[in-house]
Length: 502
Image (tube, rainbow, N blue to C red):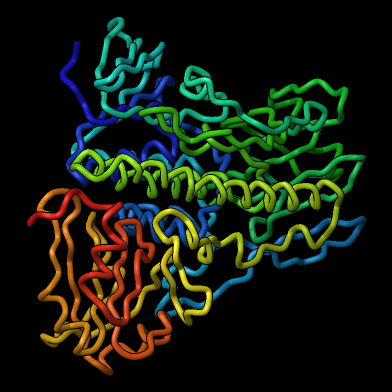
């Protein structure tokens, strides 16, 4: 049997790769295995939301990914002989507290490849062609059986995380129900195609032509378009180039428009499912293994990446000696988010299916910047009367100057795997001397900001007077205190930390 590891990650899509990158930078021993022989080759999940861009920025992935994406183009709604321009994603200007305001159009294969390259930079790799056969849990952790090109291997791990998609082998083996529905009569071809005869400055949509819905979205690289074409209930799904070209011609009926090559294709059914539990003992689910969504709203990949970002630091803290109950907060925080997103994406997809033009608009909720964990186990007493940012909210970016005259951005301070304690104005700054932080697990970085040195922070956080703000490793506010500094910090952080020294 291989030497013990801390975490076995099963599945190497965006969720599993995000988790692997986060674990690696925290010094956690892990392996990430992928049943396929290579990374995903399709564009499937092509929208990366602003909050996910912040996560990828923190992990060091965004500089690599950004040149491979673009803003979303206008829609071109083809209705009879007319083409109606339509704004689906409103463009926003970057601000001090939201530096990445727009959803980015980038094919999933580029997102996956960028995460893989970042993981390699961090000194780890994906084990492709390696399948989880089974696992058993005992008092010391989990023994997993892996099937790889060279044979079968037994691996002992403290935790196992299933990020292996909607048909998750981990979820099935853990006996966790996947509650929801699949509409077998609603099928669509989704494919990456090269075609000629169509402008690339629009996301072309035929909402009802020849009894079908069809969309062709220009992808940022080369001549590819992502095709989505709904099939009739009794229609055979032929993914060959000639058959797909014939279907496109049937909808468009435009001389000169031709599908020349298919790079990737699949048949898709709208799934709306949510795992009954995200945890079974030391087994966890994340991403599509825990929730599957209709494609509308670009929510699935983004929700999965943020699952991993929420879980990674908690696994590391418990491995360092934090209470096991911290891991229960993963489901408590993330499952309600997925349930809400499922409702939103299903509603949007139903609108598209019913050809409502309002359904092709996207707003602030889909950007996922306002998602909050207020009222959860790590923010149970988030005061509804408190103005500004509260425990459980995303910690905004802001410029600041500290007491030593050093200037910077909060997002640069939050970067890397630690907690951050912001102390604003002198009483809170003086109280930093009273902080007692354990010497195991994520360290604490403090930032002392005198009065008037961060007007953007005051606006973004809604701070009145002196305050200490504890920010979690995943960029969410853990606690806001305006007095009783040391006792308050201890009370609100103890579930997240190993036992305090002293």
